[in-house]
Length: 359
Image (cartoon, rainbow, N blue to C red; front, side, top):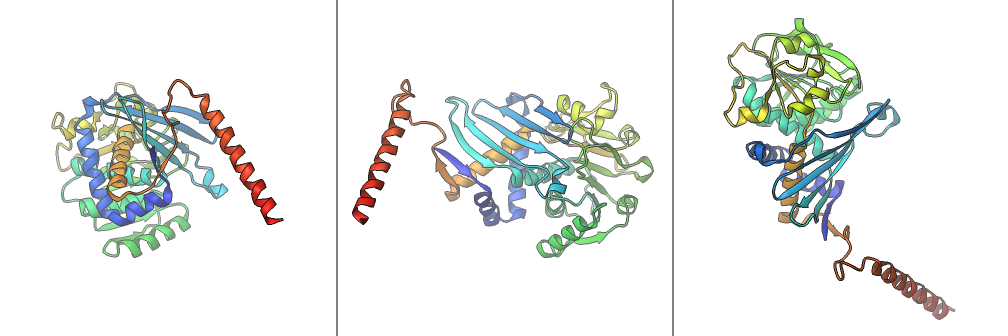
């Protein structure tokens, strides 16, 4: 049987742990897997683009487990009253190919993205960072705010979105869930960014945008660029990147999808795993500007899936489903049709008998 975690089951697991603890343990899981970087069979995600969005498959495997995620990105969905990003994923045993877990990943992706941002910022931002600008106040924003507050000690966030209702929502949610976090509404991107130690951009529009421009940048800033995650979609002016030390998850994918798609193929970047393993320097001085050009990588979903699976087993969460046929006779798959006919016939006979008894 395959364990299935739908949205209610996953929400209950998160509530049982609490968001802060869930994020902390997910950060630890991500770090452990990033430190095993060379153990994984990796590739850029497979993407099918349309005028209004993208649908992607994100596979990865080590010697024990295979994981993949299906995810979309359709900014126009907000106008339709449905989610911009939706996802599900699976974890399978490499030796047998048997699927162990089928899980929702819409909610979990928001958490793993925030956890990855926090993991990178621990390695790249100044240790004394206490203020953050949060540009883009949509579905991912609360998770980013909570991750930086609980994992890095950020105590003041200035927030901005061109949609005032999104900012209203963010402030309302954070005031009830994180009352110790000071949240200030800014009138513009420039006002939010001014004096910030960390700048997180998590906008949704599929466009070559320049949300953050060179005149906004101050010495020592760390930029956590999350929203630019597909071809034709950016958030940072190219000169911001040129003035910074830039870090990425998986370079072959980020060259295609990240903010660095604006720059020549030989523009120097550093993969995050090398910093975490001590093979490359992170921030080199307190005044240096650092950028984490985050597009999301399959390793992060692998970590999230294996963490969810461990929690599901620990708390007996979710349900077991018959996703794979029983192996009574592996060479006689056709027999399952006959069994289904027999079950259907038995059900009809029972229904006829019940009607006759009722008469």
